[in-house]
Length: 187
Image (tube, rainbow, N blue to C red; front, side, top):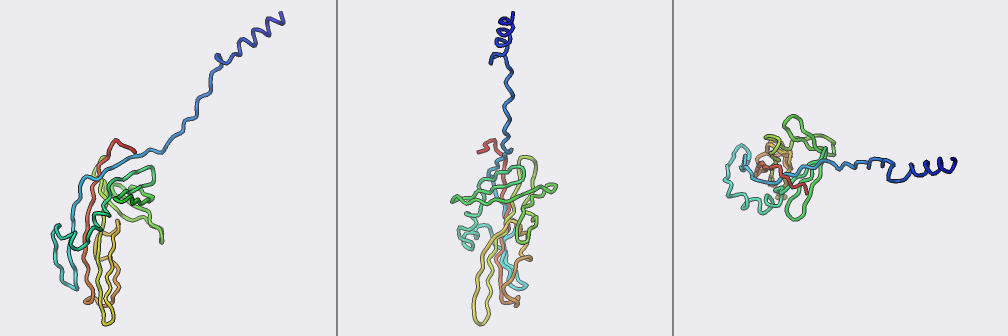
């Protein structure tokens, strides 16, 4: 009888009859990919003192060279709290982001603050704002030219000036929206 009990015990504990524990589920962060579909020029002008001169879209390359082309995002990837902005020539920018209603905010450092950078139209489309500028200033001893761009620039009035004499400087200002559409390709 003892032999039968041992045999029954061992035979009931065979590997096939034991339920296997569930595999732990490794969750990768949810990833959404958006591709560039269009752009809009919102404002393009030269400002010198109190005078402004509007430019047409055709003058962008004349004044900014290939800067706008290189700064145009081609693909954007969003995870829960991170945004990766991919541009031509393998340029990538990474930020923490959040939505405040429909407004896209990027976390900037030094000082750490959330800055407006775009808006969503709906769950499938949104735009990234970009302000481009060229500042030129002169005095009796020098001529200075400064060029740049930023996602949070929405007006030339917020640009820093290297000159205290407002008549001695001029800006070329370009504000654009780059529009993106969600894709099913999450690579």
